[in-house]
Length: 202
Image 1 (spheres, rainbow, N blue to C red):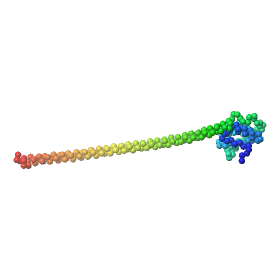
Image 2 (tube, helix red, strand yellow; image 1 turned 90 degrees about the horizontal axis):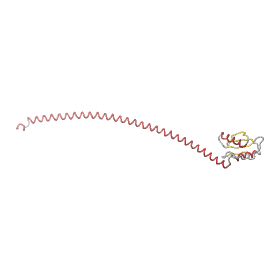
Image 3 (cartoon, rainbow, N blue to C red; image 1 turned 90 degrees about the vertical axis):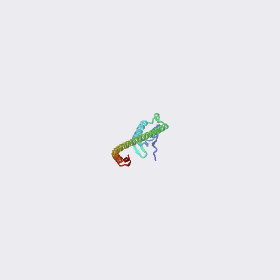
């Protein structure tokens, strides 16, 4: 159960009503304790210094409690309540709420931007790896195509040699066949000249 002299610092943070409540509590007690739900100690220390300056009290201690941090202020030995217990230089309750909402949006936007930067950096790395793999793939395909071209050239050379040999053999056979026909014609002409009956009659 919260003690009656505890003051909760909500999402609005420090505004004029918080300082007013501190002075109202100091009317009956020397110490006042404020509970801050901020998670970072540096932010809690900044809040404590602001409260100390605006209220005129003395910061006694900053303690960690289950709800966050407890800020304990001493009103001073010769405490006198000021004429205006609500400082004019601080925001009102409504404006403090608007400020808190804007700060939350700004923080969320900053986190979103950080996540987007990480995502973009990861995408760039992935694209770079894909491009490198693509370059290796294309280079291997080009190398393979060069090998295939060399093999085709070797096959063409072999085919040319084979065709030359075949043509030589074919020409030799044709020449022999032509020579044989010439001999037969010569023999036939000799037969016609000497042995054929028509030649004799003539």
